[in-house]
Amino acid sequence: MYLSRFYLPEDEHEVYWQHYLKTKYQGNDYPFGIFEQKDLRALRFAAITVLYGSNGSGKSTLLNLIAENLGLKRTAPFNKSELFDLYAENCTAVMGTDDDGDTYRLPNGSRIVTSDDIFDYMLSARTENGAHAEAKEEIKGEWASIRYGKTVRYRGPEDYDALHIQNLARRKQQKRSGFVKSLIGDEIRLRSNGETALEFFNYELKNDTLYCLDEPENSLSPKMQLVLAETLEKLARFCGCQLIVATHSPFLLAMNGARVYDLDDFPAKEKNWWELENPKVYYEFFKKNASKFE
Image (cartoon, rainbow, N blue to C red; front, top):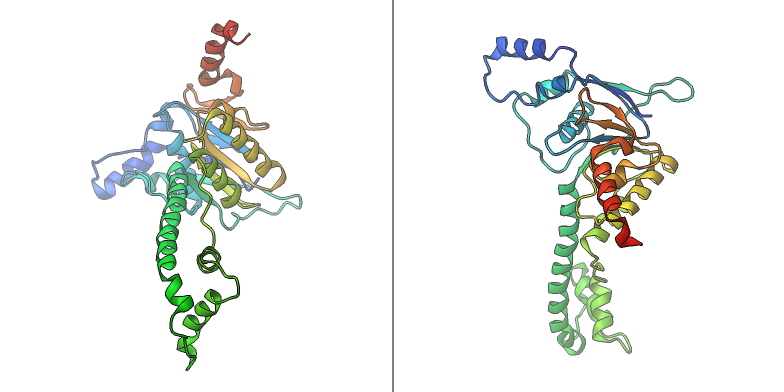
């Protein structure tokens, strides 16, 4: 594993008061106190490690602390207090070792991915198609004048683009649709939000990389969450990736070989996925309504 263990500050009070004595800071002390209350001091990582908990349990906070301590690349901003960086600096990450006993370095391209990144990816696809459609209409309007208008004379490099475009338009049996496609290409085939989100994981996540994923199941139906779970399992098993996932999705909790931390329990500790509250709620609901499916 690239990342073997992660230790939270051994004495949060000491870190906080040393800072207070230097700065007299009396503002928001987040994230101090959150994990001390859960008696969580250290995490051991597997190829897939899941941070489970209800809203407000601290799973996203913990994921962000790991990402900040490791210096992972991030795109989407996140909420943090003035003391967040201080807390992250006082955490300790221990990297794993390879078969020869050499310590792993953090792989290039390692990053934290949030639901905002996925939504931005979906929006970009639609924005690109919007610009494509505008360009398409503009070129359609100019088709006749380019094909049948005054011939472009080549006098120097500055005329090359205009001459090239006219030659494309005047090709034998060239139709307007073919001319437009040769200039601006095809539109991106728009998919549902769920399909586009899955495309993000298939194309944006690279081999041999460490990723922190914050609730990646957002916008996905249960069926597609199962597909996502299979995708993440393959990345970890066959593609050399290490994944740290914050989620409360039963489908992701049940990923093969995942090490799961229950941040709702006290003390916070490792559990089997079927021992957690969310899967139990689903189980009880379908058990109660089992006759309707028979």
